[in-house]
Length: 117
Length: 330
Image 1 (spheres, chains in turn orange, blue):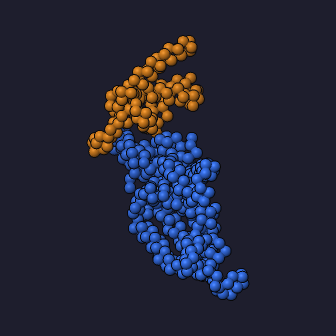
Image 2: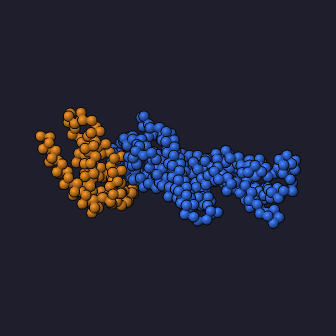
Image 3: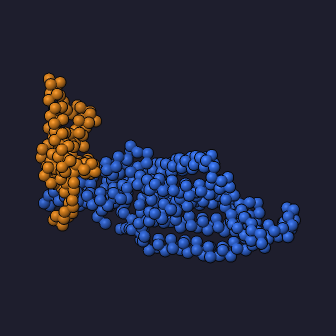
């Protein structure tokens, strides 16, 4: 599950399934943006956590595989500290998708702010 | 075997064979990173592993996130095997349908069209049967995967030690499934096509074993054997590995096969062509058909001995394989 650290009393009252729906799409955007710099899975998880986007491995890793199967990410195995690690990086196609999704996000965010006023 | 190995093995059990290794490698890496990161001075490494695994959740749940199991009638672990069989389906059905091709009617457009329609209907029927077999296997395997109420990684059973020749040969399995299906269809629906040519002097006879005076095949036993064989091989294809259970099932099915063969010979009318019997059914001993049947009987008896030995060798090979594999790892 992905949850923000700073949960207010109001957000705690939101049914988890509804909150998840909003977060699911945003996680793709966050992962693509974070992977403009090559990272392995666990470092990406920590990077996102530092940005207060907490996501568990069971959600993040299948998402990375799905994005890779859609050619939005590429990966390679590297042996580091005696342990194999899979490094992910955004592809050109992923970069184009990120730009388009970022635009969508900005537009939606502005529209929602207007609606929520 | 470490707790991480056991956990990863149990996740892999729910995944398609071709994705298992890659996901396992990634999970090992992830768990290793997380354990290193969360290990504090003075803390037991095993305790951290246990905590990390508990937080990750039951293996079936982790695997489900990789595969969206619940949305599919046939799970992701079974889909590759299912598609392998579906790909071969048209060829197998066409091969079987050639036996019923109306050669004697010539190649008239009407006859050809009717035959093609029968092929198409047969393909759809077989596809339906395949879907049903896979859905049943899937539901059966899901029912036997009890979700853990309170997940305790330390209670995960150890992974079985790999058996000798544990990786199945996919092409061979697919071929065996279709051959078994063909034999099943032939004996049940086209028994008149199952027979042997035999000579009686200068006359050639087509002897149909399933006739009153031919070989009496215990059809129900044959069906049980073939259906069991199809289910077993489909399950091995689905799992992507031979386990002790499936190897034992293979040995058991070979024994059933031997029983079918012996029962066929034992109850065959070919071996009972005594004059009294023939007279009682109004057939003269000098009838050319009787001579033909007697010849076929002798040929069958001669062929039986090496076949029995072959099946026994097959059973012995299965038992030997099982004795070589340790079955369950520590």
